[in-house]
Length: 104
Image (cartoon, rainbow, N blue to C red):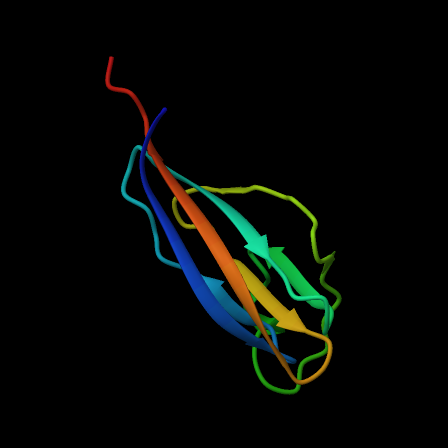
């Protein structure tokens, strides 16, 4: 794998599950995502949430993403990342690292 690009994005998550990263990848491209979360409120992150759980007035049970936690999410071609927060809204930062498979 050959690293070819890094992006940093700031996003707002709310009390409703929403897509926070959904762009499909070109064949042969891989993406790793790291998330920087605030101390408060509690943030929830998941990959590929069922479409019926996304949107207004839906209850959810997503894993908690703790501040300072270091998790790399390796996302494939069409995988999507979803997020929400416990109360109000929160600003999170995504660090995206893109790699290309070596042609041999």
